[in-house]
Length: 397
Image (cartoon, rainbow, N blue to C red; front, side, top):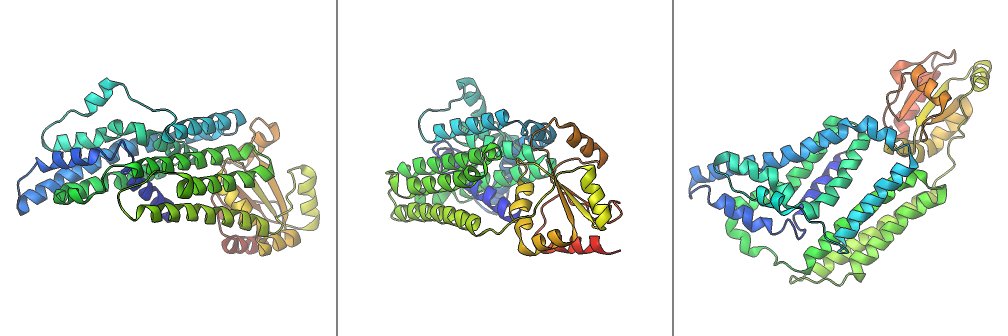
């Protein structure tokens, strides 16, 4: 999660380099510059205005994150439907095509004018932050939409708030620092083709998110090929095929670094998949399977799983393919998987009620007598080493 939040913060920083947000820099600096005079008291007052600005920006975005997360249960149910997954992926591709320059997303003029009004006092700074998202929506809207969809799938309002608060810090912090040191404005890179390159970078982020959402309905091989193909295409396009140039010498190096990073990521994915060992041999839930476990005196591990659940896939591809976990599972346990990717199965609905399953992943541990060890129940990803310790606890009398 730390790396995820760092990536989201970096995404917020990068949004400042899109063509719609970049013009906001001189506007914001002039807005803050007129708030106070020089000197220490003036700088403190300017910093307070900047904090109000940041809090306004964070309040708007974090509220969106909480609302999206509170719909998580509904979103999780919807994400069991392949049609919905295809629709979400299609919308993300549509917005990505806007960032690639095939069409422009424009807001009604009345909304833009309302957001651009100036108000006095600290409320003015707060309002500036509240409405920055409206002014910048043609560029940041597609990116934020993809993030909202992801947060909704998590279903955790606190995480929704945290994720969008961190995004807001990334988006607002450079403007806040430039407001405090407005004399450095002339050192900023001049507007040019590099901003269009950043916009295309955001477009590829949305294409990657579309691939993430459509993967659960794909066969096994396309599930592996699709993210690799996206990473390869993004690397070639951003690193070498894109012809945008900038007035600073480091830009070609930046393009090459990003392109190479995408190619390395694609190579890592395909190598990890090729070198992955065999996984656990799961059984379906049935009374016969339970009777078999009782006759052999073996504990039972039941994995409630869905393809659209990220921690479920992490468990499946990481923990449940680790050699020691697979060896222990085959030797001492009966392993049962209940796949709820497609809703409407009467047996699965009964099992969800019987075991009180609130969401996936949920892994239920039953001892050799068929009684649940509630202290071992798992509702999130665990690395192989920690999962092995739970297996060892389950085997103890």
